[in-house]
Length: 390
Image 1 (cartoon, rainbow, N blue to C red):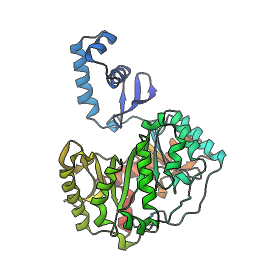
Image 2 (tube, one colour):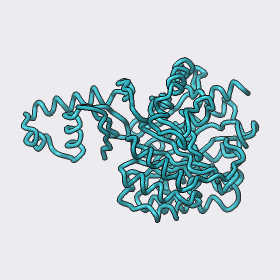
Image 3 (cartoon, rainbow, N blue to C red):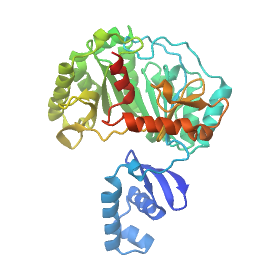
Image 4 (cartoon, one colour):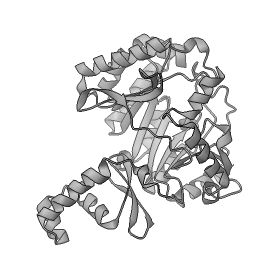
């Protein structure tokens, strides 16, 4: 499915193959026909161009567009492509590793929800991540999700999964290709419940199965720590039997409720990377497994992936921080940040300004200048600063 936005005359921003590209009108037409599974002969007849030229055009698309990073185009976006919206500060759990710490249960009014929705819909945003707190505890979550989906906006839900079945029943399955559900799972039953509380594991797994059975794409998210370290490999095998498409692992951030004793040694983090590679050699069908913020041999913390079709590969993911460049975070109270982890990235308040006004403040450009100077080694600046404080 191609999601597209018009930037200007003969210039389009599209999301295709889960990546963003900037293309002209003719290239967009070629991509759309390809996505419709048209044959080269059919495309030739439709466009009145020889099959030989059509072949050359598609080769050019493959070499010059698909293999390039969207941000090489360095376009000046008039609004963010992606928005993370923290819809509530309520949560139905008190996880031991939560970097947010104690929450105040704040939930926005319907008036503020409508204001934020209006700003997103009027700003050509293409993708919204809904989080919290636990976003599924928000009484407006069904309304928010369905409104975004009906306006051709892709959504990602970050959830602990306990309320997922009720949410899925409220979403029309015709939108399922525009929804990614990211469910937190922190080990097998015993370790998961040590971290997240009693009677949480079976319900979470059951709801994952239910969502997958309805055709929704499920990604699992796990914070690797000293409690669940020995469970990770068996957990991945289990999740794959339950319909989880992608696995995401990250190391713990010592912030909020997370205690230092939960942190893994560098040696264990490196050993986990090798265990993932060994697992993937047995199960190359597991598609993508991501392990973020793990040290490489050069000592720098990076994002690693094990990728479908290349079972021998564990390497650097092509990650670039897009905070303030292509995405923003909106808090539950309407305050807007480039990065949810950095107070200095604050830009403004949707209670008093439009998203366009906030996007074009001098503070955003000052933050981008800060990121350029600080993020020289592809390491998350927020995590880097957290490490420097330790």
